[in-house]
Amino acid sequence: MAERGIKNEVDVITIDGPSGSGKGTISRLLANRLGWHFLDSGALYRLVGLAATRHAIKFNDTSGLATLAAHLDVEFVSDEDGMETKIYLEGEEVTNTIRSEECGDDASKIAAVQAVRDSLFERQRAFSVAPGLVADGRDMGTVIFPGARLKVFLTASLEERATRRYKQLKEKGLNANLSALLEELSGRDERDRNRSSSPLVVADGAVTIDTSSMGIDEVVEKVSDLWQQVSA
Ligand code: C5P
Image (cartoon, rainbow, N blue to C red; front, side, top):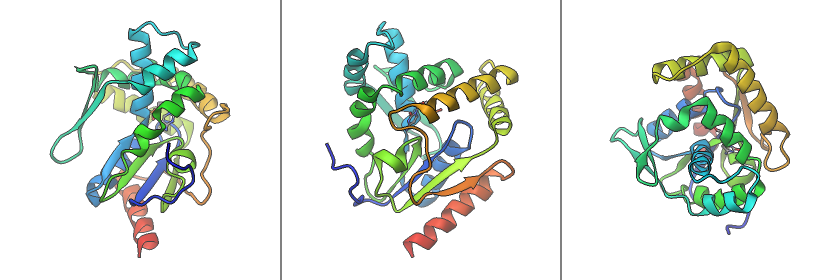
């Protein structure tokens, strides 16, 4: 296992924050602009949750979950411009399936299991390949890439985040209900912030950006500017 706390040899920008803060879209756009790799760590937790359900592994079976996470057969296949990634679990495409609120909720339950997090540690570290990596998640700056040169914490009001998630789900043709989303997001936030294993906290040295009243391009510009400053 890599020494935790070492400086990354490859340039890494970590983007952490709660659901709906814009992390996913912004990280992907930023990676694209820099010509870097992109890690959607939340997808890994969603995949473990889905695989556990499919293999009838109970969420309180911590060793079963850890073994599953360690041997998870997943593939991320990006299109040419890097803006769309197809995700495969055991050979089956599950790109949209894992985006449901149910999968998000299951992900947050199994993400509280330290053994699952340990099983996914090396898999996530392996994404830091030249020329660089934008890593999106909850513990990218605190646990997985503590030596990242730029750490960003994105946030937004609960109402704004629920509305964004509502639009995203609708665009994907999935079912969505705004008041149910508000409740689910606040429950998930609560669990992610208060768990003992890698809780969602602002990493030391991270720059916090409240995206509530910012457009996507504006946030990408801001993070790019921050990167120019630290890498100059
Ligand atoms: O980002 P996304 O909504 O896909 O993440 C789903 C869940 O996975 C989160 O609510 C969180 O509990 C968990 N997660 C995590 N650590 C990460 C990424 C996601 O615990 N680095």
